[in-house]
Length: 149
Image (cartoon, rainbow, N blue to C red; front, side, top):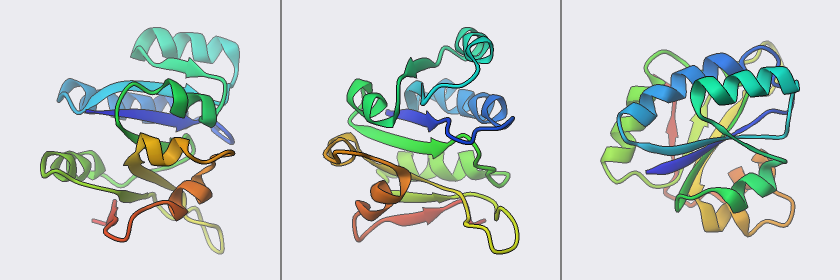
């Protein structure tokens, strides 16, 4: 089981859809908890927390410390993932999957492609000021790329 931390910087309107998609992983028993890190509109967060059971963390660093699982999946709220990515992640996890880079849909011409990471919580929490770019740098050599199919 893993903890999912959704970083809300530049979340826009995609946060509710991402949290809804993550619900199916919880139903399958692959996700222990979902944390929303970084804040957002208080009214929206209250509704999302009630509807999804997600917990709130002040920021990504706090979310990593508060996570209850040994493995964490960190995703930006703005990520748009291809159809079938949940099934691919589920297969990866059920197969004993290790570190992974989760690739989102391209954001547009000359824009950086959004991504998330799956790695051990201890590795992620060892960073003094964690962010997705630094976490990507911590992925092991055997990290796979998910979200391409």
